Image 1 (cartoon, helix red, strand yellow):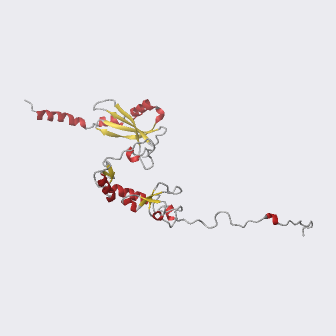
Image 2: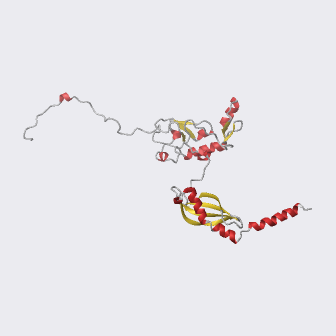
Image 3: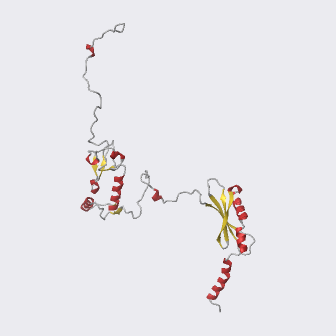
Length: 268
């Protein structure tokens, strides 16, 4: 009675010799360049295939022949034709005809998920933008937000939101505001010596962030924007009126008291 082991050994002995390419099969596969070119011409036309670039084996029974692609918009791309055969065969089978990028091909940028492509300022009316899962900037409303005044008030009133800014989220926002257009290092701030925390239009934020940031209430400046206390602009409430502005002062006079004299004809 045969065992399963004997059967497996017999099958292995039959398969392994077939896995080795014979010289005749190698010659058949590598010599199928004309058949590969004909397949491309049938697939896309004779004008779409350029010079022959070479061939390489894919596995013991298949090889790929490559040709330069001559197609508008596909500079640097190549035609790849996979041919297959078996020991003793007198012809190859065309398995696949595809366009593949060559080493100098122009490729589209690597795909980036939508949520990673969205940048500040992209949101427009009607758009929906959910926060990422497990966003480190947010914590459940029943946890401490890191702002002592806010946490104390929420506890006293018994109200809260489902999520609030975490300490990391608050620090991230603070750093972004400090480094941004309305921070102390902006061109506007560097052009003046006056700072927002001393301005009458400055409305400090509530809570711990109010020690550093506020909202500008001057419609002629950064109206409604969060500004760093060290930011400044030329519309500061203490900006003095420039000297020499307006109409010049003068004493009114009565032109009725003027004497009109005739000029001599000789001009003297």
